[in-house]
Image (tube, rainbow, N blue to C red; front, side):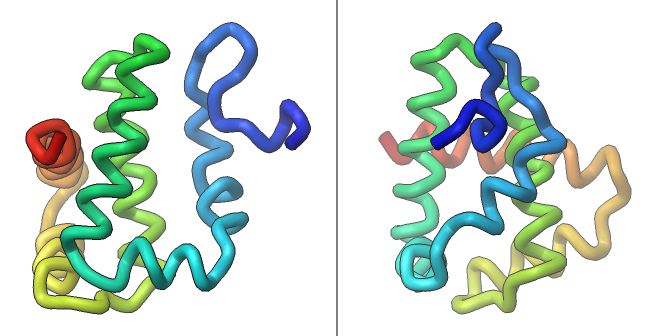
Length: 114
């Protein structure tokens, strides 16, 4: 993978503008596997949070990333279970601040799943 394909640059900084591109590169079968049930979604998110912690990203940076991912999912993916539907509905009715707080809660949920 080339350097421009990564969302973390060589200085270890997150490039939020590249998150959508990274999500678009996930192949359909893998996306279906991740989103097929809420447990697999939490496990995937937990693995990504652990990777982010290992490279030293702050909770705020992880929450901003989770916010980008949640926005992408709300816009581009149909919920595949009740939990995803609830998250999508909460996302849609929330304002920017509430969405950011929900993203923090998702990070903590993923951290608790370890």
